[in-house]
Image 1 (tube, one colour):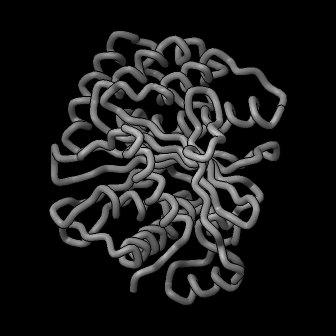
Image 2: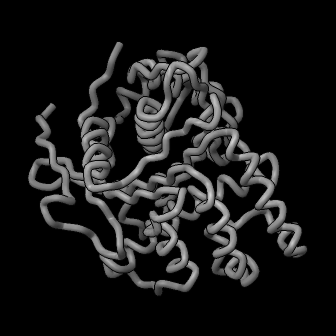
Length: 312
């Protein structure tokens, strides 16, 4: 069964748009396995958006990046006692702040893609409408028992992940997905299998073709290196969210240097690692995707995609 989702179709059109403007997507041709690391932010009471971030890379390239990370850790003995460059710990740790530019520069030297999507809190069902009825249907299909708000986040992430897999995978490649351990993905180990099963179902609905038609799901930092790779979506999810909310919603807070460092890095696309920041919202009965870059929100017609939505 193929699924049509207006927000996903809009995202596909958006990718074509940025390509027409000269944005170069990575080809992911170095190995037969693509790896996606994911994280999200936006659970604080003051948050006006939910932030979903993904780092996509060839498996073979991860080995090369690992050598550079190990070298960085060995050059900073104190860093070996740190879990990783975690966004929420940056404000409390001068070492992490000092290492941050070198850490981000490592990833810029290797081909990959980081995409961060902010979803307005007023459009919680931007990708897929989730309610108690849907949660019951999911349970009936064997996907476990979910609270509505947790299932909504899971479906948002799975929808975007399925789109990315559809865009970058082919029948000769396999997929491995890494996520932090939390209440949605692996925090409750009994639900870990259900999460993977649900993702596989999304891949089928999106008609994703991949080698062996299988996907691996790893929901734990596991090793320091896994933590370092998961730091990329962690930093981008938190950094972009805070930047946008402070500058455009007048929320209290200051753009601290480490947040500026993250945003400067996210705006840098002259490197091998490419980055995209977009905001999904609804206005005038249309769904929109807005490109966020160069420390401004582009609001002219070429930077906003809108799609009429029908009442269901």
